[in-house]
Every structure is written in structure tokens, then in C-alpha cells.
Length: 549
Image 1: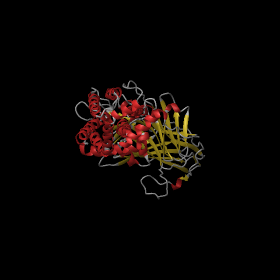
Image 2: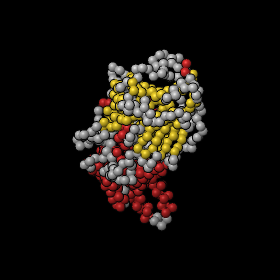
Image 3: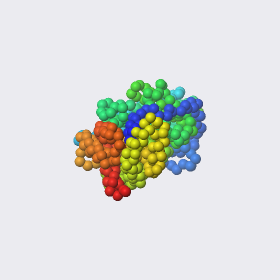
Image 4: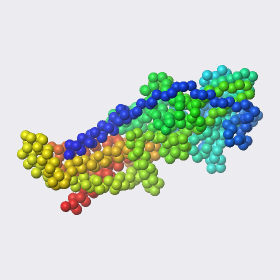
């Protein structure tokens, strides 16, 4: 039995190391058909901004008002309680997006993360392109804007920037970006109005140009993702929800580009903790293009149908945008199933309930370390009875060792007879030899699910416990908790009924040493779970030894 238990542990570790690399399903082939054209609307039917329009009408904008001022390459700042965004009027491109609640590091000198430069990109990541155009427009075209700055808060929950560009021959292009004080979501309305005397056409496409930030020198066990701390984990840069199915695509899997042309719900560029996502208001005709531009950079484009504009007609498209953390609760409020972006792989069905339970306890304790301990207690209570049965079975197995030794001596030359007599012995004493493996089997999915939660949940990022533990998602800097965990595991093994074979007994006592070295580079929160699980198991073993017959 002990060999099977040891084998179960070894197999579980191997699964942890290799399942991410060998079992990620490849993205399905997509239909590359050209998206249909959207119907254009005569200019006379356009409704100016601010006026109430019929429910069936598309958003439209008037000619640039006299109050709109020209700013040659001027920065426009949007300040909300959640972030500070800076746009450049040249190209209406995003220059900076600093999230106020998330800092780049712990301790002195920490500053808010900039999603536009520090994490998801390395330059001006977000902008507008017009593909297949028969008029002169470049991503660096100079836009006019309605305000110099925008500040939102309790007194003003909603505001907008209206970027407008007009060609010499009379094509007007507008980008209305609506911001909200209490969310990372924005609404983007694009409009093209042809006031020229000839037909114009072009396809507006949103662009996120991202840099893949590789993690160097993460330390620890290089074969285990993130074993050197939370910043050592990486995720595929491209993610998309196509017909309710999540796709995550590695840069190395792109020879040139990848397209999704049907049933597009949203597409995004991500890292372990943050997401930049484009969400079309109309899925029909929307296409995502994922393109590799170098070994460390990539572009994500999303566009709708191509616009064909006869004179005095207009064309509109609308999107929702999200630039923010992959927080499960926040993603749910955005809608469009954006919460699927936080994916725990095979263990999602276990990991997300565990995350919800941890967040519940955090509401009352204000400490995710204590939340992990309470979660450990809940798990132990749920599996108390099967573990209790397992420990009792192991104790009964120890009593059978003398008789099993006699059977081995008696039938040492007849393995078939030995197996039959051994099974009869188990049935006679009502002992299940497999039940001793139950505690390990139970803990395998819990262990993996919690590992994923601690590694990929932004709630745990930089979450302190007490004393020297200031980040539960990173390894213990002084290795104190792994050593305590190893000591508790040694005590647990010492108290557990030992097999009759001295060699197997020594192997079981070596396991705490192996686990200690393995846990040196694991997230501290995971070590905390294993430590308190061992302490509770020791208490359960004391109870069994005292009260079992």
C-alpha cells in the first residue's frame, strides 16, 4: 500500500509539472470568410450627441462643433478612482494606463502599475487603424478632442472623450470613448461620415500592440511554472471567447497570424494578472486577428464589417473595452462572459469555488493567510470521515503484518496462490488495502486547484500574512514555513501506522525531506495550507490512536 501511496505522490507532482505543456487543447481551425458589410445610413438620419434618439438608431455624431479645440500631439488625461489614463491626440492613441490599486512591487519605492508600458505592452498599445481604405488616413493622424482633461469620481460618475478627424475632401471619423468612475470598462463608438462627393470605403480596426514580458531568473525548480514565485508564471498572450469556448494561444504557435471570423464574443491580450479586451456590441461580422510581429511582440486586432460609404452616408460600430485586473468579481460585472478569462485549466471546477470561499473568509478576517487556514479547516471537516476510515484501515493493516509474513513464507514460490490467500485474509478481517491511499488521492485535486488559485488569482498577489510573510503568492524568503511544513509532515509520518517492511518504512520517512525541498520555492500560501493540513491530520491521528478499538 505504501508503495502505491508514494507512487501517487510522485505521479501527482509529475502531473503538476507537465499537464500545462502537453494537454492544452490546440485552437480549432476558424472560418476565414470575409465578414459581411454593414448597412450604411444616410447622414440626414444621424442624431447629434446629447439628443435622445430612437431605440433602433445607431449612435451618431454631428459635424465637429466650434468648441472642439485642436491640440497637436497633446496629452489628454482621464483621472478616475481606479486608474489614470493618458491619450495622445496624435492618433488618439493610449500612452499610459496606471491602475491605482496595484503596485509594481512591495515596499519602498512601489508605484502604480502601468498596463500600457509595464505589463501588457511596451509602447503606445491601443489605437485605431483603417484597413483597405481609399482615403488618406494613418494611425498617427492628428485628432481634435472635446476636452483637455476628464476627472471622474463620486460627483461625476460618467464622462467622455470625443476624438474627431476630418480629411480634406470631407470624410469625418469620430471616436467617442465613454468612461465610468467605478469600473475598468469603457464604451467606444466609432463613426465614419462621408460628406465628400465620391464613394469612400475602409474597415475600422481596433489594435492592441503588446510585448511579451518573459520572466528571467525566477529561481526554484525551473521545470515547474512559477515555482520561483508568482511573477515566474506565464500565460498565453492571446485569449478569446469564441462561441462560449475559451481559446488561449501562445506566441510560439503562430507562424504568422491566426483569425477567428465567426461567433466572436471577445478577444484580448493578457498576462498572468491583467487583461486588455475588446468586446464587440455585435458579434456578427466581427473578426479577431492575432499576429506575431517578432519573438517578443504581437498585435491583436478586432474589426467589424468593411464600410462602403456613398456620398452623404454614415457608418457606425460600437465596442466595449476592458483594461484592468483579472479579478473574478470585477470581470463578472463587465458581462459578456469576460470572467472566462480567469481560467484555472483542468481544475477550474474546484479552483473557482475555493477562490470564492477564500474571498468570503477574507471579508471577515481581512487576511488571505487566515482565509487559507479557514479553508483548510473546512476541507478537513468535509473529508474527515473518509480520512478517518483510511487511518483505521492502515492501523488494521499493521495488525495483519504477522499473518501476511506467514503467507509470504508459505507461498513464496506460488504468487497466484499468495495473492488469493492475501485477498481472503483482507476479506476475513474486513480490511480494504486501497483505503490507505485515500488521504493522498483526496488531496491531489485540492492541492493542484489551490496551487492554481495562489498562482493566478490577483487577489493573492502581494497579499500579506503576518511577520515575515508579506506575499502569499511568492515563495517564503527565509524558508521558515517549508521547514515547519516538513517537520509537521515528519511527525505525521511517524504517528501513522508503519508497514511491516523496514525498507518501506524508511522510504515513508524520507518523504518529508523530499517535500520540504520541493516546497521551498512554492507559493507561501500553498505551504501554509499544507502545514495546517498536516497539523489537523496529526490531531486526527491522535484522536484515532486514543479512541479506536
